Structures are given as structure tokens and as C-alpha cells.
Amino acid sequence: MNDEQLLRYSRQLLLSEVDIAGQEKLLAAKVLILGLGGLGAPAALYLAAAGVGHLVLADFDHVDLTNLQRQIIHTTARVDQPKVQSAEQALRELNPDITITCVEQRLEGEALRQQVEQVDLALDCSDNFRLRFDLNEACVATRTPLVSGAAVRLEGQVAVFDPRREDSPCYRCLYVTQTQDDLTCAANGVLGPVVGLVGSTQALEAIKLLVGFGTPLTGRVLLFDARQTQWRELKLMRDPECPVCGKR
Image (cartoon, rainbow, N blue to C red; front, side):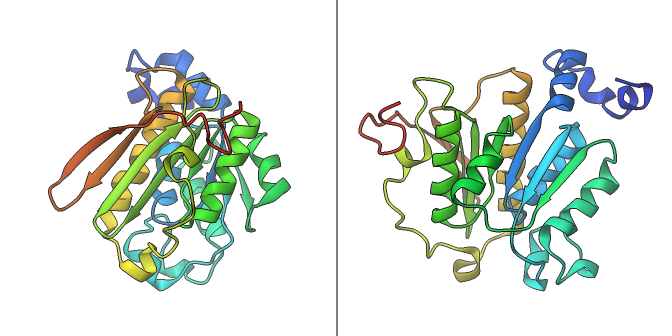
């Protein structure tokens, strides 16, 4: 690290869990963020600020005025811009030291798998089950850790699925079928700070996995209830009959 980097990251370098060795791991890491909406916005900002060296931003949507209530990476001036371009601009202004790759398309099939196998970790910040299922399959196939988040109305959840571990479940162990596609923010609404909490927690779990400290959320699902300002934890076991990870 150079002197500017030592100064930029000085506050997290003071943490024994990170130190210089951990910061160098972050600088060398490559992370895919699928979705630059309410979850991807805070997650991307915190990962860029922390010095994750290469962020791959994937989203096929454009910034809409209705996004700005919660998607804090975008601005009014960038309405109608592709979300990946808007997010790239914000992240470069925040930390010009990192590399950013923009993928302005709906990733699926082989294209998704190719992106996943090139990164150290993936964040699921999407908003529909088809994308979530596809990303999960790609992560299991390539043994890539997946940090999953979701939020709608006044509720959120976060989980980590790590196919490098034999005991880790995958996303399909949690949701067997695509039965909740109608639970979108557009149809049901969402409070901005709820997606902020979930996306920030995703960034925290990603940093822990990349650096290698603490206890990740593997095998656990955190559920957040904004009405009560309460987190609950559920244990999640790997399903031996899971169609995605059951035979690995």
C-alpha cells in the first residue's frame, strides 16, 4: 500500500481484525454486485469505501425518480441514466483508487456463470426470484460465496451461502420454489432505511468473508422487523435433497 492508501484506510487498519494484511486482501478482491437498487446502493458504497479493489456492477435498469427515496447511490441529476453508469460515477467520486467494471445487461445462463467464476464473492441485491435462483446456481457451480439480501415493506433478511463449506446450505435450501415474485417494492412499498440496513449488513458480511475474521452468517438467516426494530435469527441446514447443492 502507498501512503495515500494508508491514510484513506487508516481507521479500519487500526482494527486488529483487519490490519494491513486484511486491507491487502480487500484491495486484491473482486466482487460482483448483482443489482444497483436499494440493497446494492449501500452495499456498493461501503465496499468501495472499504477498498475492495475491483467491483463488478451488474444491472440492466435505468434510474427512475421513484428509486431515489431509497437507492442512495443515485441522484436526481442522473434520472434516466443506466443504473450501472450512475453507480460507477458515485463510486469513482468516493474512491478513485478502485477498479469498476459495468455490466449493463440482464445476466443469466452462461454469461452469469462466467462473471461469477471470475470473482471472489457475489452479492445478491436483485429483486426477483428468477435472478436469485440463477445466481445461486452459478455460485454453487463455481464454489463462490454468496451474500444474499432482501427487503420489502418494513421487513428484511440477510444470509450467507458458502459452497466452499460442505455444511453450508444454498439459497434453494431456503426457498424451494419461486413463489414470491409478487413481493416487490413496486407492488408493496418499502421504507428506505430498511434496505439501507440490509445492504449495509451485506457489505459487512462480504468484508468479513474477504478478510477472514469473525463468524459469517453461513447457515443462519437474519430477519429484520422495522416495526419492532428487532432482529431475529433462524438456523438453516443444508437440504440433502436440494436440486442445486444436495449432490455436491
